[in-house]
Image (cartoon, rainbow, N blue to C red; front, side):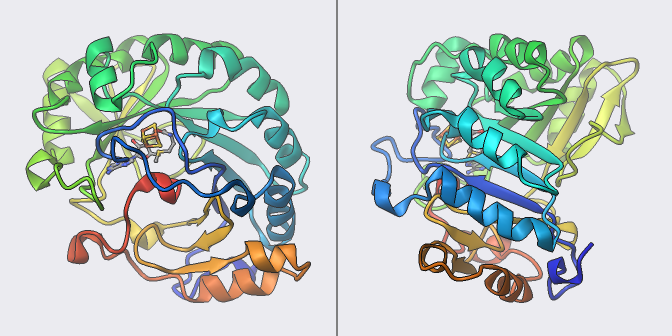
Length: 327
Ligand code: SAM
Ligand code: SF4
């Protein structure tokens, strides 16, 4: 690991989340207002060539793993073309995608062909009417079909992310956990973060992960587990005896995991964010467009990466919606 890629607290940074669009075909209740957000004009968004140029400059500093996210990345035209260009950058070992899964049955083979390694799919319910109610769009999303398409294309290990909301979908924790006994899928229950303008979702909707695990354990004992072989993020995993999949929890509300944070984010308009919360960001797009080197800016940004996020203290921390910063 290059010393340049250690932040001021000694955490090594080798993982970049890249938001390729701020737009989405869903309007999930916890993520975006029903009317959408003030979308970025096209000229402000990094082109695929510019995204690749950023990654090419950061890879020699130790960047190894990428996650493509948004907004909804699969609505940007010709996403496989970006994946193929990123795959060709020396030093990049792993490329993952976070998606709502709507377009996966159609896109999974081309994405794999282009060099994508694996996917995370957001699945907040297994019931069609409830999926449409949470997403505030009925696009015929069928979670098991998306999962099968991803597995058939070789995009594993596949992770399913469910944001658990009390009184909205928490009655499905057991049925979603049950999938891991039948399928090689890694479910992650995410604690709802009541951020920004989604003020209708409050602390009362947060279901602590300890409670989620206790409910899942009604199916049988859960043992701590290392989780899927690839992708080491903030989740803590468990497994039912003999199960092909695992049950994970991500706990932004009841624990912080900032001490092991190994990630930074690139927004769709080319800002490097060193922390999900607050306003620690550096504009890489304009220097890139002026032909200036990005390495020194990256090193300086890391020197300022905060020790931990302030969501628990500030509640909103300047964050309006996760779709704006790539989740
Ligand atoms: N559209 C893609 C998707 O839904 O997976 C990628 C972007 S989305 C912003 C990334 C992740 O952030 C999703 O797993 C989503 O569930 C999560 N997320 C968004 N808002 C959230 C919130 N308020 N609390 C917890 N998780 C949230
Ligand atoms: Fe779109 Fe993903 Fe946000 Fe849902 S969570 S509105 S799918 S960006």
